Image 1: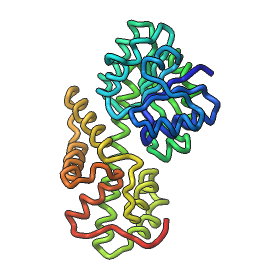
Image 2: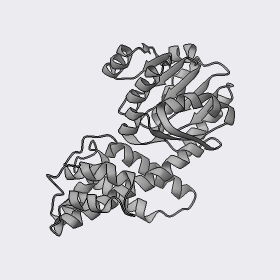
Image 3: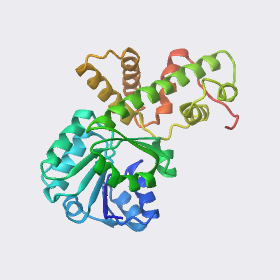
Image 4: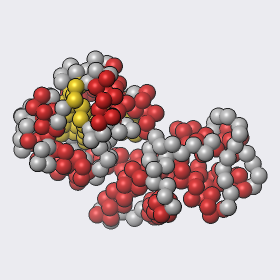
Length: 298
C-alpha cells in the first residue's frame, strides 16, 4: 500500500485513521487539536504539517467540518497543494457541496493530481466499526486506487459518477437521515404524551415497515436522554443548509427539508448545537410539554 496522509482527526476522522493504522497503512496525520494528533501518533502514525504531507504522501485524505476549511487546507498559504506533485490523489471525505468538490477537482487536475469526493454515512459508530457507506465522485482510475483504503474504513464504496457526484449523494442521504430522525422524534413524543412507554413503542415497531437503521440508532438514545454526539446537530445543520442552497440553484423545492432547517435553527437558539442529532426530539418535547424517557433498556 502507498503512504497516506490523513487531515482531520475529529469525531469521524480519528477512528477512521485508527482503522487505517490497524490495517498496516503507513499513515501521516495532521489536525489543529494536538491531543487528537497525539492519540493517533501513539497508535503508530507520524505527525506532519500540511506541506509535509503534500511532499511525503501519495494519497491525501481530508475529513473536515466544511468546504471552506477543505479549500483552505488544500489551497491556503501553507496548504497541501503547495507541495503536491503530479500522480498523487486527494480524497475529500468531508460533507460539502458538489460545487465545492468540483472546484477542488478542477484546480488539482491542472496540477496532474487526482481528486475524489467521497463523503460517508454511518456516523461515529460506522467510523469506529469500519462500516461506513462511502459515496464517491471522480474518475475511475482514482477511485480504483483509493478502493483498498475505502474497504478498510467502510463496508461499501461506490463510484456514482464524475466529480461532485459523491457530494450530491451525501446531500440526498442527509435529507433522508435527518428527516427520519425528526419523524422518530415526533412519533415518540406523541406516544409519550398518550401514556405509552417510548422504548416499548420502539420495540413494537422496529420489526415492521417503520423499522430502520436510524430508528435503531436514535430511538434508544432519545429514551435514555443520551445526546452525547456521534453526529452533532451543528454538522447536520451545515449539511441541511448545503442541501437547501443546492436545491435552490437547480429550482427544486424541498418543503420538508426547509422545515427541518427551521427546527435546527430553533435548537441552535436554545443552545443544543453540540448535541447528537437524536436531540431533535427536544424540539418536539418543547412543543408538547412532555419528555421522552424510559427506564427500559434497549
